[in-house]
Amino acid sequence: MADTKTENTLSSDATEVRAQKLKLLREQIGDVYPAHFHRTMTNAELAANYENLEPNTETRDVVTVAGRVYSSRNSGMFMDIHDAGGKIQIFSHKDTTPEEVRALLPMIDIGDIIGVTGIVRRTKRGELTINAQKIEMLTKSLLPMPEKWHGLSDIELRYRKRHLDIMTNEDSKLRFQQRSKIVSGIRRFMENDGFMEVETPMLQSIYGGATAEPFKTHHNTLKLDMYLRIAPELFLKRTLVSGLTDKVFEINRNFRNEGVSTRHNPEFTMMECYWAYADYEDMMDLVERLFEGLALSIHGTTEFDFGDKRLSFKGPFKRVPMPAAVKEATGIDFLAIKTDEEARTAAKAAGFAVEKDWTWGECLAFIFEEKVESTLIQPSHVTHFPKDISPFAKEVPGEPRLVERFETYCNAWELGNAFSELNDPEEQRRRMVEQLEQAHARGEKEKQLDEEFLDAIDQGMPPAGGLGIGVDRLIMLLTNAPSIRDVILFPARRNKAD
Image (tube, one colour):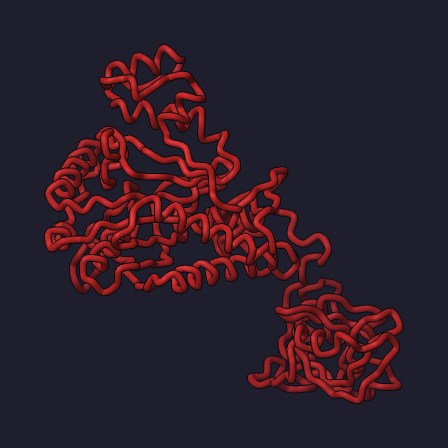
């Protein structure tokens, strides 16, 4: 077993010191990375079991724990070890710890993973502690850890070396624990509401369900170009046609070969669902109930802080038709405007730079984005979108230029998008053909008509409400994260050499 004199013979380079210690440990104790170690409880279980142990009290209970060394004091006499659930102090003293065990202490560095067996006590200062009787080296760390209290200051390094970010940043660790809780909460909510979860293909021979640039790959055996899905919509609707269930959902990964920003990542998580015999108003109610429940689960209240804002997820949310919102913000009454040309003229007169071929609906949507979106801080449903930009939603009765669609906004971000779904097969085909022609005109020559989906719709899809929620943005709000990369465990990034 090594002793304290060993340190005098080691290199001054921190990484080299660890390598030399590893060599010595292999010589003296053999396996430094054992396959088997059994702890009797986690640190969190230990803290819970001995919550009522009084200060300056020692038990007769012998426990075995394990964790990574985060701090070492008095030449290893005091060490803090952490596992996923918390920390525990380890005390190694000549009065309680055998000499051959204490001889291992100089070989233990911050970052090493050790197992400890000993007696539980609480110190005079109230620190739950284990008096070590046995210490085992479970993993020798060959690299120094970042300084615990400052962590990784380089934000790009935090994303590149997420393991170190979580290891040294309690906020990051908590955020990803909360992410798991939120995703699980969404799944439980949907299942408790009667929705059935399914899995649809990520690799698709025809991409569709949204307008976005796909990632392309090739299947060697099938000799077929394929695409990573940009949305699961068309497969989920086919599931609804099948009669497998009247309420279907999927928590899915989507891939879009487009820009990267604080709110956009090339791969992202969505929850998409379809509800037979429901409409977009039912989906509004579902969103409100879901958001309210998630806020309560994470914060214990429907009100919480995001940056310098106080948000409330208490339903019902504000509901405002898009034309009414634009009229209030600009004075332009689009419902009184009859033609595309009049819409462009009105927009230009108000100072908006619109394209010469834009339609009535495109002008309305553009002005909404320019003047209204940024004002939607508290959760709000914007309803009655133009049909021009919503080809798969049913028309608003009495107003054929508008459709039964809403988007949910909060903090000026779009969080969800929902329709009263189009299920007229002839109208569905007409709109998809029109959309395909527009895509080809934009140069998207690989875009194809999904005949298998249209065949399914010909079989008959019940009237339904459909909804997609951007899970990552929702998690950003609930965990007070300024960037989408803060809530994605391993976000897309440039190569290190770039």
